[in-house]
Amino acid sequence: MLIVKLVLLPLAVWRLYRLFALDTGPHAILRKFRVKLGVKYTNDYKDWTTADGSWAEGITCVKCAPIYISIALTLIMLFLPDWVYLLCTAPFNASAIAIILENIVYAPRDRGDKKVSKRHTLSIDDC
Image 1 (cartoon, helix red, strand yellow):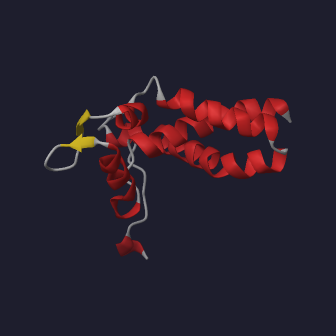
Image 2 (image 1 turned 135 degrees about the vertical axis):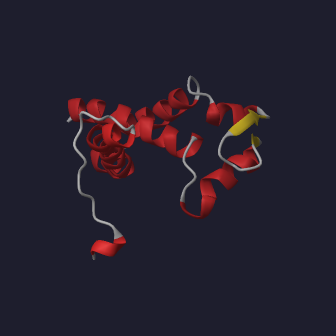
């Protein structure tokens, strides 16, 4: 069980970092959360410009935030039962795997790579 936990830990850390540092979330709730912490965005909210304050810098720093997240998840892994750890990390592991697979399967087409054939994707008009 320990090997499974250690394999799944980086996926959960990566997904949680992406969630808190980069994703907007439904109704832009995660972006609003980052603004409350001190992250400043451009006028069109497409990119953040500065992170004022230790909380904002800690949540947006690619070198810092994963360490904090991994420490928290490691403590959960060490001191709580296995089912609690899996319950806490399973949604983020599944989400991370789905994002990775989506990028592997569809990213070449989205980049305009001519070697990859166009795949049919369902749209609202197809239903």
